[in-house]
Amino acid sequence: MYDYSKWIFQLGHPRLLVVGDLMLDRYIWGDAERVSPEAPVLILREDLDEVRPGGAANVASFLHALEAKVVVAGVVGDDAEGRILRNLLGVISGEITAVVTDESRQTTVKQRFVGKTAQRQPHQILRVDRETRTPLSAEVEAKLIDGILQAMPTCDAVLISDYAKGVCTPKLLRAVIDRGRELGKPVLIDPSRGGDYQRYAGATVITPNRLATELVIGSPVRDADSILAAAKTLRDNLRLDAAVLTLDRDGLAYADSQQSAVIPCRPREVCDVTGAGDMVLSMLGICLAAEIPLVDCLHMANAAAGLEVERFGVEPITRSEILRELDRNQIESRQPMTLDQLRIHVEEHRRAGQSIVFTNGCFDLLHVGHVSLLEEAAHLSDVLIVAINSDASVRKLKGPERPIIGERDRARMLAALACVDYVLVFDDDTPHRLLDAIRPDVLVKGGTTGHIVGREIVEAYGGRVIHANAIPGFSTTQIVNHLYTNSSAEDRS
Image 1 (cartoon, rainbow, N blue to C red):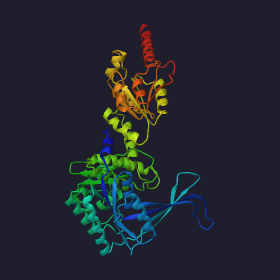
Image 2: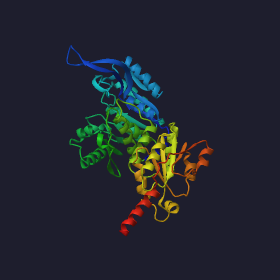
Image 3: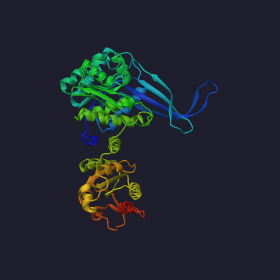
Image 4: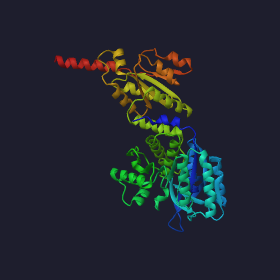
């Protein structure tokens, strides 16, 4: 698998304009402890009343967590919920001059009642929506469009989140899309479900989900052929740079001017799909603003959305979390890393306050002694890096008959172990160059020898060096000699 994590460090801090239906999400948490005697309904004993940004405001929240600079444009009502939402947006972006108060509308509120039973995973019991769906008045529409157009020249991209609550009118969409083309700014749209999609024509990217795509296309979107055909149809009919379809458990699909493909996601435990579409839009937006190639944007968006559905409710995802998810995908691909790739990961882990442990060896004929060493090393720190000698290096150290197993397969076996985070193959006689580059917090070595190569390097910068406990009777050399002895005895008989 290609290492997409390098793009994390090229994201920078772009300035993004978020336009759309601003909402307030309210969560009433409690214990669903019994059934009411008054009616066949659960009684929820309330523990917590929580408010979060929702709708387009949630996109702004996600972007803030991804370290982007955020400008917000939308409409709230002249009510208590609108004032709460303005305060939340002020914390997220600080730039809310394009948020218009409309006295004729009520702020959209989605109130979720969430219950736990016997301390299990919480579940929604009921959702109550309060909203206005009528289009904006001409006066409010003009004021909002003016605020958006004034903000666009200073922004790197525009993200439109259309929940069909009346804010994303055809006139507003046309003004933003056309101005984006004039300025050369990407305009990404998470479209509403149903309706005439020609209002999105000319956008850079739209990101409909499977159901929305089926409603627009008028046919099922299920297998690879129908998925790719739908993406191409949307792109061509709407004159988009690309159409990106979000496909829940099937990942993402896209069609641009060069190609079309389905990007699968790894299997995972889905807790709550709320916010997954917002996360895709947010990640694509920040990546395209940083001028990262679309296919790489999609892989990162796929990883971020996968993390989001593992959580209950809408929760922001950080760059460090996305990097760790990309790390996990890298390990699952059973491919070793280069030193340059690994240094990028190490830097991010250190930024996240995590410590690094390093060990190295031939790891030929993986046995219980190796596993014991790796498990002991993994418990000493947050991240375990295992460097293995290349085939040429092993022959130099052990003789022409070794290794028994080639470097690629040795790396794959180590990467498959849950305690191992990264695998690296090196040609040098010693790990000195790796230790200088990585500077692990802890160097761990096993075996029976008391001398640990590289000790002086690690201790010089204040790192720890630990000799792991060896399991008597287990070494690759002993196992190989035993096999040769038994084989010779069988030949003589």
